[in-house]
Image (cartoon, rainbow, N blue to C red; front, top):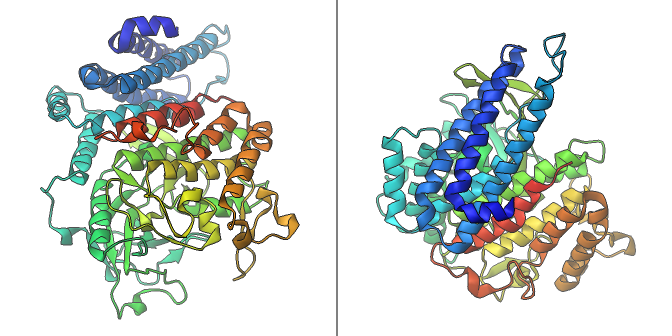
Length: 531
């Protein structure tokens, strides 16, 4: 199939994908009315296919603007889409040929969110970073021609990208600020093991997440305000289920004398008096962080292979969108990875037009306290918190830093988190009560009596230990492909890393090269794993 795709090119493969997609939707008609819930899921699949079909048409229009690397990763994403479509059709054909299809309960497949869309979407949205006015013209023309399933989200992201790269046509800065009196008194509740808190708005009772901001790594307060304001505006119209990033409603500005509005002992720590305000979906009222989940033991959710792979895929996609928006996170660790889900565990989510879907757990990145523009100036200020440094590349550990932060440092941090998920062991033991954090058993060094601060005195040895875990115990638990993805992340700044090692390759004006490589070597490979 690879040779055929190479000959056809992107436009030819898009035509084939459209043909197979329409065949899948057509076959689903055979199952309508067989079961009420299955009928609703089929309508959902049809709606999603309309969105994908719009995206495929846009690819054809933007294909001349792509460079060879971007064209290659887009083509490989289409290859995966085509393969998954054929698998889905094959499964439906097996059900249709059963003689007892109309007899008794239907043994139906569950129609979930298309997994390969998590691979396809990042490469599609990456086209929006191309610094060419033709991209804006094509999006506007597509909107006028009636492509509505995906173009609005694309245009919103394009505006956010343009704004973060110098667009001065921005609304009044005061419009993004919230104040404590805008929250229900006493509603702020900290998320265990995380710096984030949940609360409710006073005007509409909507559940929100408060993610505090600090000034610690900024050269000036003005630079901090600029970065967080731009990021808040970028995330104003994001889709959490697609991007792994919650919709930002603004920035909470904390003022003195408001203690009466916050419940006793529940006030979050806002070092700079500022916090992002993210909207939580109405169907997902329960929030916990990955650290709490890892410390919960082997009997907790995600102990199964399929659930761990799904969690890893969502995390990788979320990181790709932070970079696509033109920012670096700088603080990726289990405390900043939130899992939000319905309470009770499952409920029916109305999608409109008679469409319904079971609402499930979703991953969201928070902890944007040290986030900055990917092209912004860095102060090279660090800290000695070993439990944070454990997730940082050796170049970025300690008080005095010798290199500027870049996107690959985020990829390294993701690799450490993916390693923990695969082993399902916390590298940090938060202990009981207010005790100081200790080394968890996951690193396999705590038995020797070594403390966290002592361990981080030799950062390259720690990295070596992580690589040993990725190449040995992790592969035995999660398989070779997953182990290689983690190894790629952990070695992404090594010169001998064939995927990411050449620093000169990542100095392109659009930031597309590192995004293409990341999607190809991390997101796509995780998406190809089947259980």
